[in-house]
Image (spheres, rainbow, N blue to C red):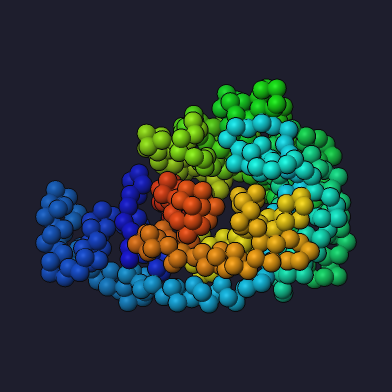
Length: 461
């Protein structure tokens, strides 16, 4: 299976099953397309000559050489490669059964902001406000170490609500983990996700010393950010948090961080928000589409989608321009490795929610991920007893790219690995469903990411 497309002036042919990416001219793209249709060389050459009759560089000799190259690439397994992954889907998942590598600790089911688009109902997750005790958090870390098998690196995200509203427990849990990790043969990598309101010098120093990554919530332009990200008095938070984020990022140096924004029906021109973040001095960025009910005022409409797709292409062009000018920046969804591609396990098994990755509530309950917290039918167990609902875990273990019939003919399936189970569930009522709008956005981002990285690899910018 191949996928042919164009971004700007760049023509790409992706061999789906091998992951090989070919940057070609328009005539070569047509030749490859006709090969896939089963046409012979004798049929292809006159057909393409006719199509490009006004291009003097497209000759029968050149097309014959192109056919030779295509046949060689096919022999090397770099074009029209067969899908050899499907038989491995269940086997690879079984190999890691019972091994947990990451937890999302909901240290605070409460928040000091009142964002109307919040999937977590302003941090309460459709339940009561609460904060996690040190005892519950300690048990969660013990659970992770006890169920991580031979894995050394363990990931823990301090999440909310707003985790800084339970800051002392965050610090105490990090101290506990550091006190036992060497003896247990483990290495904890912590992430802090924060809205920034409570960031101060102590938070900055601690985060830059102990946090492998920091995720900072900023929606870009002041008027966009302050439309939703307001306190309980209705006051926007932009002016409060931006100076704090700037100070944190400057002090962080080369440390990992992400400015994480959300775009909605009210700002589908999200590239302007990215430009604002760049002007503020931030260069590791992510803008995520809102996920909400179709009748929500924030939901992206069909009209918005056309603009969003255009924004992704313009973003790729901006990244090329900035790279050429010596001012590169990172966009989370455009980070892609064309030399190795996603590992086989990632290609077919997905994110690992419910199996390798779990969320922990303030009470110690386990859920498949942070977006399922509060959905009682998806409760897996708790940090003391472990998984006590194996049928729920089995449902998520079976959630791979081949579990969804709609994915079988999708050219992007081995990069998204079937997509987000939470988005699928909230859109269709099934974790094996397909969130079509999310699929459209993912495919567009992947088109741009591949083209952008191919351009960089070829030294075109």
